Length: 440
Image (cartoon, rainbow, N blue to C red; front, side, top):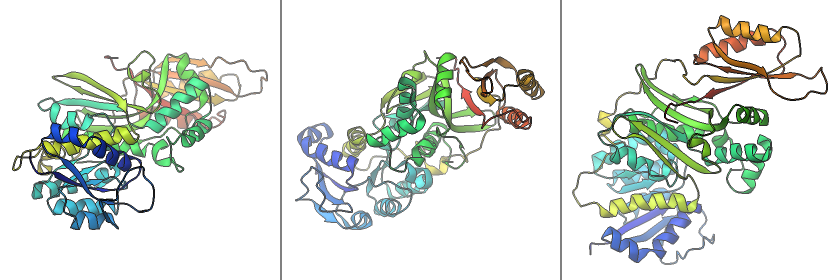
């Protein structure tokens, strides 16, 4: 049997501790399936005294991750600390510059520095693997980077943040407010004490930017994504969507158009009977549409210690199985020098239309006035109605629901601004895209 593959792990949180446990419990099985033993020889974490439920007494301990990456006698550096900056960036860079393979679950790091780090890996003949960085245990990176070679991808989209999906699911099923569901998500550990990175869509945007690069062969453009989170989604929106036959999901969508690549993250209404609408709780789902295969939908756990550790372990196993001197698959599916500059698509008509919720003062002519502003902006309405609800007090504001046919977002926003100027709106309007892909 070949010599052991020596591993160093930086970061012993939930994922790191799960990975250490799996490596120890399945040592013999991994040696058999990989053709060589996988040995954990070094770790780095902030608190050495913390009980992580695993025995690390025979493992070398480094005070910081950069020292581990720079000095330890290891073959693979596993980065599980998170964050786009240091120590994650400096330690991963240091390992790659030594020609040491890197496995990471850090989507923020890749979204900001992925192309640079991939270039260093290519120069040094090292692997940069990151299956766990997007959608947890779902093998979407391997699918795009290897399995779909030869396919031309037209679109990749999905539910990529378990926190948001949990909140939206709970709002719908239990009729609770966004705030109540967020509090529950924090109590269960699905959301951080500061949940803004998740609920404002940034986490999904980082993941989407990585998938976009893999799918379309472009440089990562994480700062060039239309971004909208779920903080403005109300129980009224959830109920109105249900009445219309939809469920609301936070989707990340990247698609090829004639003018470039479109990337967007926002709440979306999807048909209730579609497969992706049935993805509930903390589960993730990623779909890839291509010319040869058609549509591939992958569903599975998007976070958690075991799910993420499983993806990390898969990356380590790939390295263990690789032959010395063999040519490595580039981190983004092709050499960094072959990645195309990202070209943002021109704004185009959204085929699914829009859901618009307006709360208005009960005044004669409001319906007609709203319809006129829509017509002036070339927006065709599929329906306009007062949301079915009994109002005991005639002075109470009324909720009006509009559903448009395909139109440009700029036109919708312009119409909303005009309606605001009329003086009968109460509060801010809600605008949500509707997705109705033919294949659903």
